[in-house]
Image 1 (cartoon, rainbow over the protein chains, first blue to last red):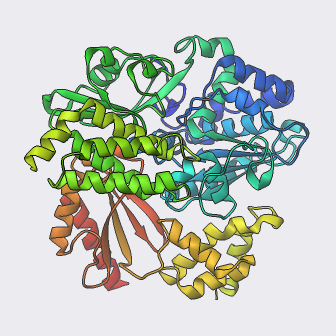
Image 2: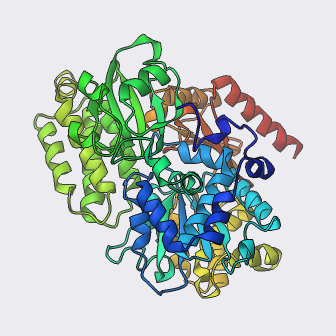
Image 3: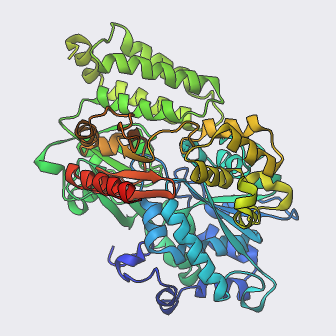
Amino acid sequence: MAEHILLRHRDIPDIDQLDVYLAHGGFEALKSAVTGKSPQEVIDIVKASGLRGRGGAGFPTGVKWSFLSPGVFPRYVVANADESEPGTFKDREIMERNPYQFLEGVAICAYAAQAATAYIYCRGEFWDLAHELERHIEVLRQRGLLGENLFGTDFGLDIRVHLGAGAYICGEETALLSSLEGRLGQPRLRPPFPAAEGLYAKPTVVNNVETLTNLPPILARGADWYRSIGTERSSGPKIFCLSGHIERPGNYELPLGTTFRELIFEHGGGVRDGKALKAILPAGASAPILLASDEVLDTPMDYESLPKVGSVLGSASVIVVDETVDVAWLAYKIIDFFKHESCGKCTPCREGTYWLHSILRRIERGEGRAGDIDLLYSVARAIQGKTLCALGEFAAGEIASDVERFRGDFEARIVDGK
Amino acid sequence: MLAEKYASEIERILAKYPPEHKRSAVMPLLYLAQREYGHVTQEAMQEVADILGLDRTEVGALVGFYTLYYDEAEGKYRIQVCTDLPCALRGAEEFAEALCENLGIRLGETTPDGLITVEAVKCLAACDKAPMFQLQEPEGIHYHEEQTLESALKLVEELRRRESHG
């Protein structure tokens, strides 16, 4: 993509300075919305753009907003900046380098949702970044771009930054809201969805940082322009996070529908040290692993194509795995993550990740037993469909895919006992 | 006492949340307590609970749940190396081991002078810059990316110098 729509600092390096952002059309989209469009018109434009949630679930953003309980106030907007999926590091780059576009997106969302307060829930490790965001917010306040009566209207907005304290589960929106309320970050039963009863039991929109950063260009250039990027059902640009055994790891902003082959070999410079590509994790630790076949490499990375090859797009954090990697080890690394991050609320996830971990650890140590592979598979299946949130689902799905698609690696480990 | 010593900072924190939901301030107040005492002591939990009208056990549960709060004293500086899968694929485990070996400790342990703890942690959203770690110190958390053993040891030296001149 010649022009960056989200990672605009790659084209305009000083865009983290408000004056530079303003000189490049910054806050025009918010102004035109607040002074010239009704909240419903903004929602309709976002719906028409086809924008889908970039945090991983891919739910249509405008549709999510339209579920807000009518007539109930106050309402809240919460930016999900709890970026914690292994392999994902895009929201951080946006907030560090192009912060005002993100903050303008928060404001547009708040106007559409008719919320007077927005919170940015940053993972605790983003300590420096959170303090930097607070400084940017203060600048906006001083310049009259946040606060009461924006652009001479009766719409006002305050944005506040809240730091988490180290819990992957808080990326799940209901756990995030519980955490923001000062409770354990554990998911809630849905319904009610946050749009009906979210923060402090009030109607709440929770959107990912990248999702919100798409809003200013959508409002400025229109839904038709946005739909001209990407595929029919997956419109717009996407930041693909490329990590693992790759020559040039990093974030790549490309249209949805770009193939794995183009991302890995053209943009990422291919597999590191000239090794052969063995597998791809398309969405961090949270999606089934893919065998790097030609069919997979030629698959467009969009919401509808990944399921056809047996995985999902998720947050599009692509981890490249070369031929030297033993998938039994990889599965152990992944379950070690999920066991640590399971919040403990649902028994199948808490116990299931514990037992998967224990079996995978003994296989990894060369102490695997006959029957362990089937046992792994059966524990994974026992988690699926039995938990409040997707964490257990992610763990089970990934481990089951390792066993299904790379069974030989597990068998070799058990027989050899390396 | 936090309530007296940091009255204006506490007021600023509380102002972020609706007055009827001041419980939301528990996480920033725990960071404040940790900054003051080095870790969250039982007394600090009580202080935070008193400010917010909570029970100490409720505050204690949060300290136990969230990994960035500590209820025990360890190294003043925590070097927390991400060894999750993407970082591990780029040598983070070997990096962490080499660092520990050089400091004469095992992963998770603290140097004999009580200054530095080296730990393995989960994904820090910096996978493209591995090996990397975050330095957790009383004043906050800072990222150190694209690290080598040499650059990490240089930082350790700097921390030790800072202490001896401190």
